[in-house]
Image (cartoon, rainbow, N blue to C red):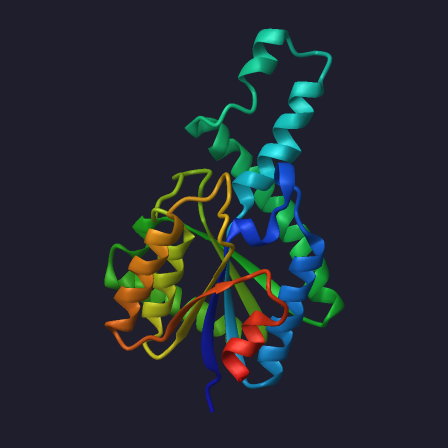
Length: 226
């Protein structure tokens, strides 16, 4: 019997604290819930935001603090322009995945990273290939972790809410949980309006979608198992 597919989108405001610091406690709690879902017969797919916010702190702060940089160069580093965000995303993505992979391994779970742009969904054959790869991971006990490929195409989907929606559509009878916080994130895009747009479009297709406060304890499990 095939496992029930659950797409869980985690907003950057859930896992990033002040000044771009990753909240290891919340990431650990998210992994615990994903492991429990697998034990209950579900196949979770994680869509994880936060690479830009994390990378801005890790990469650009070090650049600013470097004695080798001129004052003019330091002033330009960390500006929230497009190229800065693209560069930060590559650094932040590695930071997030290293922590996530370590947390998952401690619980006997493997993860796989997949970075995507909107172009990857352009043709039916490409969408079919994405579906096959994700199924292969899930059938072998691997949790796929997806994110927009912001290094190559910043906010290609208009935010990870829309990417999560596209993944949910690939599997028809799947389910989508969008975890956020009411305050939002400095580096996040889309906001509440985007989430409602995704939710309504999926509900029209018969795909159950919930927008939840990702900071609440066991919110994923309570939403699925209760």
